Image 1 (cartoon, helix red, strand yellow):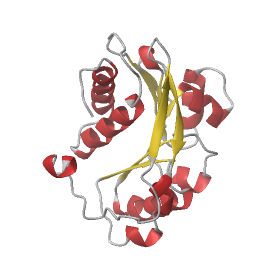
Image 2 (spheres, helix red, strand yellow):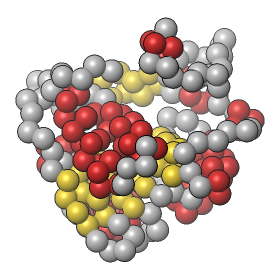
Image 3 (tube, one colour):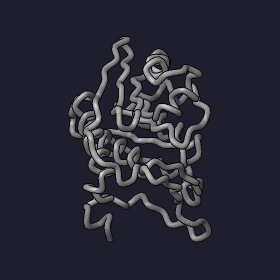
Image 4 (spheres, one colour):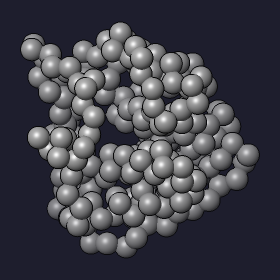
Length: 208
């Protein structure tokens, strides 16, 4: 009902009678930081055949579904001109075939350092950019950095807010980024809007 009220096309949603819904359980600290236990459930049941006929302006991927499905989706939509965004959460070892089909990688500081072996989020962002895709590394209250394939790097400051809970901030950031890029807005402006939306979410001003 919530999806229908938001005018979301759910024609490709499939119900699996055996698997439970995917979920994550937040483990929060008093200052609003958190870790999460991820239970993929039905997310691991997606079949490559469900991609038949799929078209999109922007493809947003994350790692709660099978890596082979991510790759198959990118292989289908990248040649059609879709912008491919890969949110590397929860972190897994990078598939170089998928990376070559990805336009924008979104990671937090810890994921960026794990992905590259670099210490320091700016160095890690630049290292990801040398792999052939733009890197957005989020760093909580410091905002994020955008490292481009041309070697440039730009800071996007966070909006100062009182944090109620940071749970879901990355999802909000990535969803807003994808939606803004789908509207044709440039990456810098889309990233700023994504950062602002995440700030509203963690402060309790934006419901999801």
